[in-house]
Amino acid sequence: MGFLDTLLGRTKPVQPKLDDLFALPSAAVTLDAGAGFKPTGSGSVCFRPVEGRSFSDVQKDVTELLDVSSGAEGGLPVEVTKDSYGFNWLVSSRMSDELDALVTDLHAVNSSLVDNGFGPQLLCTLVAFKDDSERRLALVYLFKRGTFYPFAPISGERRDNALELQVKGVIGDDLKFEPDLARWFPVWGAPGL
Amino acid sequence: MAARTRYAPDRGLTVRMTATMFLLGLVFVAFIAAIIGIGTAYHASDAAIVLFAVVLGGGFAIGSLFYSDKIALRTAGAREVTPQEAPELHGIVDRLCALADMPKPRVAIANSNIPNAFATGRNSEHAVLCVTTGLMAKLNPEELEGVIAHEMSHVAHKDVQVMTAASFLAIIAALLIRVAFYGELFGGGRGRGRGNQNTAMIMFALMAVSIIVYAVSFVLIRMLSRYRELSADRSGALLTGQPSALKSALVKVSGDMARIPTQDLRTAQPMNAFFFAPAMHLAPKGSLASIFSTHPSLERRLAELDKVQQQLNRRAG
Image (cartoon, rainbow over all chains, first blue to last red; front, top):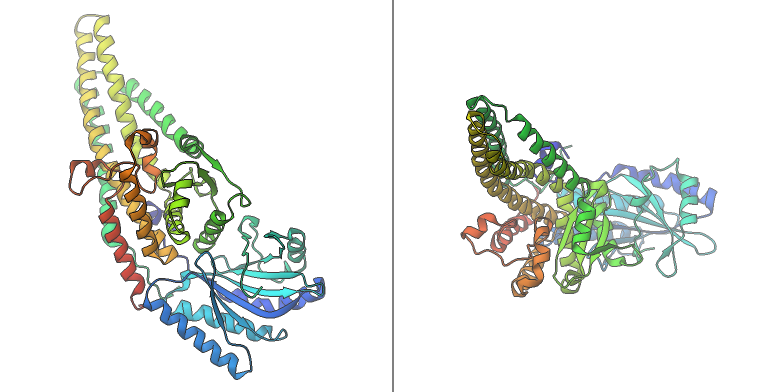
């Protein structure tokens, strides 16, 4: 934001960065090799709904589009859930070896929101992983920063910081990681995790 | 990047704000010119007094800017809270920060039944956001989010710095009034002769100019403050995408304010400039009080949010 915008109190909504999401499949291979975490096949996009008809129309179109594409390949329909903070989560479920298809799905959601002028409403995208001992892990992509961070919830709204830092060590070079740890905000109860 | 956007800046507001700042600048220049004028007219140097006021006023402004977070938290009786103590509040702030790509401010809660919120701090790295327990009890999560988005827009717009810079002139003018007043009182008793009469005239002229500058800049600062509130409303509503939630929060908070007895509010009054809604009776439209108010009227704020609502619902262009 420029000096003049600050002086005049005009914040411009931040446009999302979408492209870095495609680095995910190759990082997933490294993650499996280095830490034993495999994708569960489920991923979600979190966005802030805008009130009014315009936005709900776009959301409906996106959901239908994804349903058609995943239905043709024998996948599950897309789910839309609302969390307690008033954010919507669009969950896409694929087979666990279809990470490429999942990322394409998620990208389709993102780009249709951006194309309709709702890009600033995108919060994050989340792809779920788990290891053999059923530990859960999510890689969260922050749209506004274009960076990833790990989120490993354990029971009772606590997070496994050791595991998160270990994951950063394993795939820190494959993905653009969020350097500011203060921005690794928790997404408790995220659908699809 | 040619991404399609629904977010056009509000031209009218920008123009009015620019005009206000320009007038403030003009007053500043006129003030300096008047001081130099007084100095030359009486063949005397009033530089020492003015320099004294500028240094003292500057020190005061910088001090209040640097300690704004601590002063505000202490005045409001607020306490910083960790994510474990207030998970919902931190959750809302986390999400809004990620949505707006802003560093996260510290979060504090003030134990007060007056539903209100403020954000302060010299920059976004040292910002602190405070809500009262009354606000959290009164509003539902979406309305609370609307209020927090409004406060975070104040941080993003650097309103504390802008308002401190704007008040600088008024602080100096106020100091000069005082210095000149005491100069008149004590300076008159000391010596006799022409030199003394000269000093009295300088003091009188300084005082007169300072009073005018103080009065004009006071009205302009209040005007600027109202425009910045409207800007924060607008940016906050665009950020959450829910102007109605902010509107209903405004109605709830303002309705409550009017019913609360004023005696409890005296302590809250100096903090008004940073509050979400002023802890005073809202001034009726067009009255003299509305010129001196730090916040726009409820009707004005609701009307501006209606515009945001229409803008968000338009087809993207």
